[in-house]
Image 1: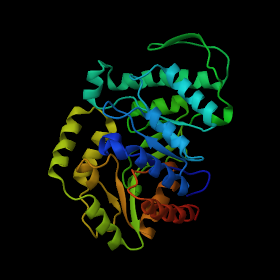
Image 2: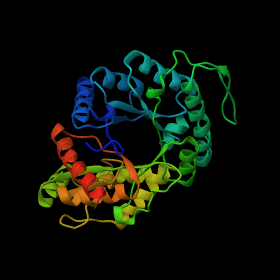
Image 3: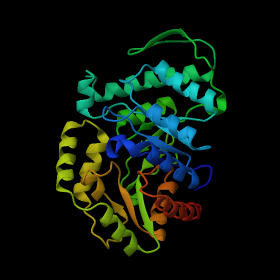
Length: 339
């Protein structure tokens, strides 16, 4: 899909959005489409309403040849040793690399049900300790001791050891100052929910690697793309009300930032800007979309790349063909970015 410096991830369908009888088939289809399109990996969500992401990751690995699961990891769900053991075990069984999307928070109701009352910024401090233990356990077979505010381990050893080339890539939300600080401390890729490319700051000399979450609908002509976009994401009053409730229940920086941008950026069909927040506002997705002709969307992506964003996490692809269109756009964007 793009050169070795740029990594593109798709996203796995959520179990809560698909009938049980068809869910596994859907996971396998999306994983295979993603691999065909040259994606580095595929994001697997986690929250209280979804099936366990590690089981989904294993399904992905068993039904593809090289695409890497990007597993969302919530510290409230499991000890850092258990995460390291999962990564090590999958590496040992399948010789497949796993990426970790480290989640500091989540829906407030989910956290309350788990009796997790840790304040927002403190959760990122906890996340640094949590991820550091995982990283240390996977570096070598030597015993690990760590004494922190939230976690303590003493002479803990990881068996089977993970080979260095399978060391997991780490991603952390970089939308808040606390999240960005955590990403820097961990050497992780800071993932943002971007503004339009012209409004994004230059991250080429940032203290850590940067990436964005974004959906894409691109066709040979803008008219075709916008027709598909409005057909796929029609107005949904119930979804808009759910979005408003979710915003009130969340202390997530990215949720509030995108909600604010959604009220400021009402883009009608035919507007020259490809940046579109309508699906987010209607609670159909959790990221902005880029909509337009191949050339228009490729130009926007090239601007992000030129500003230092080298990791892209796409929305859930509805079809194999959609990823093929996206592939064409990234091919153009790669060429534009080096000019």
